[in-house]
Length: 503
Ligand SMILES: [Zn+2]
Image 1: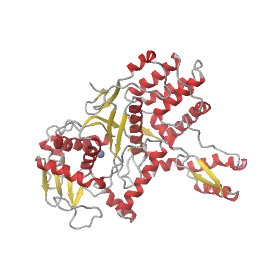
Image 2: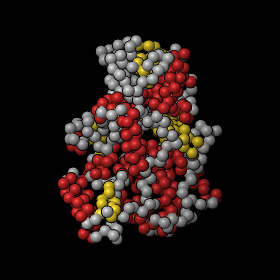
Image 3: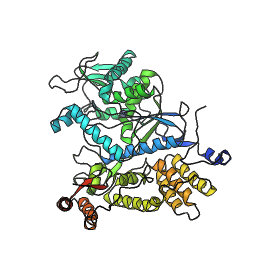
């Protein structure tokens, strides 16, 4: 019998007799890509969820489409914690082996990034990992239990490849690398519903020489003869580097065991990366690799909204050269929480169309929400009345139903307007709800103005935000100079707020 704990909302102290309604909430239902259906979620080990999330390839800044996936995973983690689980949450850092093409051609994104910037690969990895952690914090994402790096787990990856070799799942392409033979894993097409015959017909020309099937993938790549790689290691097969897919299986199994409760990523991982993770992990261990596969939908970009106006719309990506980062949004006057709110307005599995108009709406909605919740900060009381319990129930039901956060947000807004709720309970519900929403509604915002700032300078702040939003850097800089002349140094905080110091 698997473990099915009750939701444990913050500040919730009703006695056991009143908890019958919570029983109905015990069934957390999540959409499992492997089953193509919503299924009741239960962990394999009572009280503990082992969750692995594919992390960033640190060759460049994360774009806001990448970040949407981590916001969804954060909402999932918070929901699991509200359901009483301890979550062992692993997010890897890919710092080697991710090629520019999923078909094992092209070059290593990390080595390419290093050449672009004239730095070492190690410096590039460190720089963009730090930038990623900054975005992570600004968005209020809960720190994972571990951030393993691919380069820190080379022996584990080699051991996994050796296991596959021993069991007869690999072959060598001379001068190229060690490949996984997908024909030896008959269930290979199942997870993504692949049409292997169609793919073979279409891929004859583009396929690497020596590869037996277009779906075969590299486990180990040999270092090129004609170029010196910065990152390479000795292996039983010669000097080289691990393939991208093998790192996730090796690190997930090392840190979480051979069968995970949940494996997450973006929907773009389903066809190749996650299909390959399943093949190599299950062939090595003979056990199911993950019980639930949960995928976040794409952030779509309208053509006129792309950073350089050059892209033709579609899924946000870095390949076109220019892309929108969290800092780009912040420089245009939005806060990281505005973006988090924007993500909350769409169901995690749906496409979300990015637009600045949408960001304006999200910012206005969050401001209006804060107007109602700010006066409640610090007044939270335990929930006793049936009325408050019913709001709590509705909220948790929405969240427990495959993370329906758009609906949960609506319930929060309705609850705030309920005239029959006691203020203390209303405040208690905001605390409980925000544990899941993560909008920092229970923290006071940095003050927009303070007593030590002259009124004429205070009045310039909105103008500067507007100028930054319109990329009017000359006006924005002029206002900064006015502050400096008056003895104040402006500082733009990562969360989008503006601070200042005397100096
Ligand atoms: Zn992965």
